[in-house]
Amino acid sequence: MKKIILIFSILFLTGCDINYNLTINNDQITENIDVNAELNSPPITAYIDEQGASETDDLIEGVSYYNIKELNNSTFLDYKFSFNDYYRSTATNTCLKKVSLTKDSQNNYILNTTSYFSCFDLYPSLDNINVNITLNNLYTLVSTNSDNQNNNTYTWHINKKNYQDKNIQLIFQNKTEDIPNNEENTENKKEEETRSKETSIFTYILVITAVTVFLIVIFGYIKYKSIK
Image 1 (cartoon, rainbow, N blue to C red):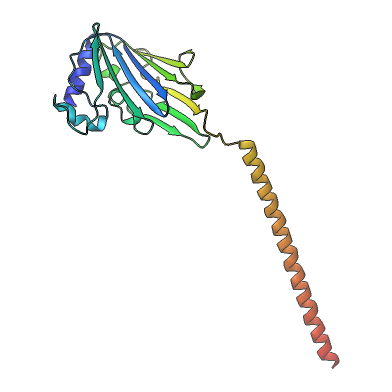
Image 2 (image 1 turned 90 degrees about the vertical axis):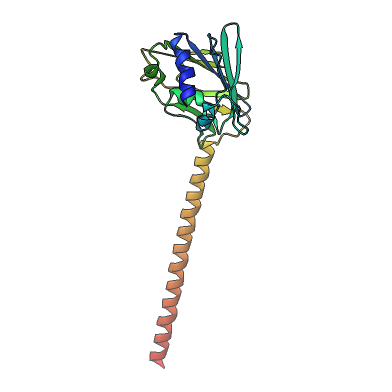
């Protein structure tokens, strides 16, 4: 963890802006971090819970690492996560208390973060973080709190003025998945309730009829015995 903090400290002390890019494609999330500075970075683990492996420069078998490239005085870090493990991203957990990707009963995918970018407190020289999330054609937007939109890319601008109360939320759907029909479900529920009421009434009438017949038989028998 010390090595990760040192790397990000060098990064943020440069005062450069950070472009944090996510591409959502085929139930995978590709994370790409664009830094306009050369870090000469040692290996960085992709998952925050494997951070102990970053205490050494040696790659450890079974541990996942960011792909790191340095080109034209810039450094690029990228890694491809599944929907289920994106919340473990080292990059997001370095700056945010929590990031989640969940799915609700309407088959909506909800990407949500806490509303405090703590890295602005840790690194006073950090000025801006631009978050860009792109949905491929497999997905359709339901709602978002992004600052800007360009086609299927949604952008948030985080800076020293808004980092304490700025969060990211993106709700989207997979076009190939069936969306529950609320009207149909409501209609089915009404039909079930109607059938249930009809069954209850029928049962009530049947019981009353049976009791009535029983009483008639009993009274008839008593009357017969008294006459005899």
